[in-house]
Length: 323
Image (cartoon, rainbow, N blue to C red; front, side, top):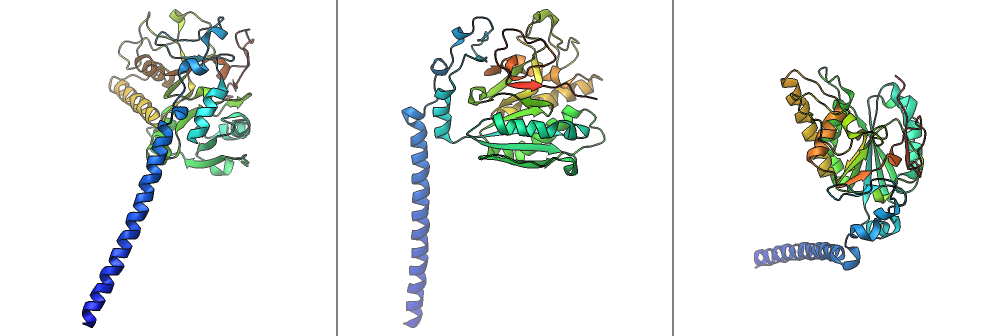
């Protein structure tokens, strides 16, 4: 009889534990469904392009591509409309920067300070600093909603190209954890200073930066890879814009897709005894895989140039690296 009571007590305890688990599971599902319902809510729907983007405001520049992607210039966008949407989603945006060798001391402190002041203000931001020497890092102080993570840059003897090293490492970290931490990710070179707000108008599935040097030039003169045997080859008469490799962005998934394409291009060239620069491969990728949003030269302006009237507000200054 006593043994039976013990069995019943054990069964009751198991039943109670299962009930608690089911209750927790129920509330977890309920919370998930509420979140899904929130996202389906009419007010949480992503705004239509016409709700926040008005290309007619800037008749002096190219504001829409042939594939109907917006080109973001000052005056073309209504950031408030986009913020109403993104604030409700509580997004996190990542900014990856590679600071190695002497460039760490030359540029990183100003890059981080200016990004802290102007990059995605009011949103959760994670700065991913890829470095090969922690001892050279400056003191990093960030404002609310901002944090940073230090990521070691791994090198191998056969990796000689800086951009290949950066992309190989970035790919590894996106796979490992970045893709689970951010909704959007930008990759930038460290020789930049943010001058004005770089906001949610720049967010998109696949974001390309128009090169400041080449926007005002004839497309026939774009410095694409012209060797037919190269994986980055773009023949004369083809090509949309010349994109700058210093800045690109999108969802983590699209970042991975780009890096996979870039690495394959480098591998194919190597098999053919060729080597093309990183920016050539990036331009070939965006020729085939059209970006969903383009950033005007205002987001990456070279201050050594005379500023033309089309550049209304410089968002980011691109500094020439001192070799």
